[in-house]
Length: 181
Figure 1 (cartoon, rainbow, N blue to C red):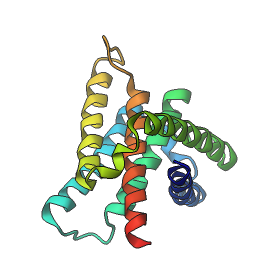
Figure 2 (figure 1 turned 60 degrees about the vertical axis):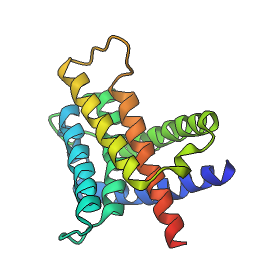
Figure 3 (figure 1 turned 180 degrees about the horizontal axis):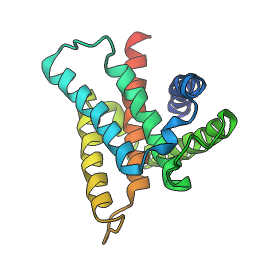
Figure 4 (figure 1 turned 90 degrees about the horizontal axis):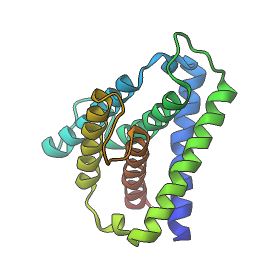
């Protein structure tokens, strides 16, 4: 499993670099997003992936890989927003943004490694399309929880769903990196 550990780190570095560059370009403008808006952003990305998978073609010059990276990054933004609440301004600086980003990447990795141990790397036998469908399912679950003002009877909360979306996107990115290697 150390190979998965390293692969997670490689993909996380790619995602973090994009997040970092966007923070330099835009600051923390994403801080104004309410959690429901973050969920909708992830929905847009996952829905586009599914559309490309079904149609077999993309008319915009960004493919599935960039959308998976966006899902990871918006998932982390969602977790930050759950922790801090949304803001009326871009109220955190670059260093604070990266510190929070790194915190949630480490939490996502720990969760993934724990589940990976229990599920014996079953994700490696899954099809790419399954990651997309599972992310979309998690989005619909999250929307329902949000509509219920965060209350659940037996289910995990919004944060757990964001973590799962992040990790399914990471699995997809790892598989894509393996195809290139």
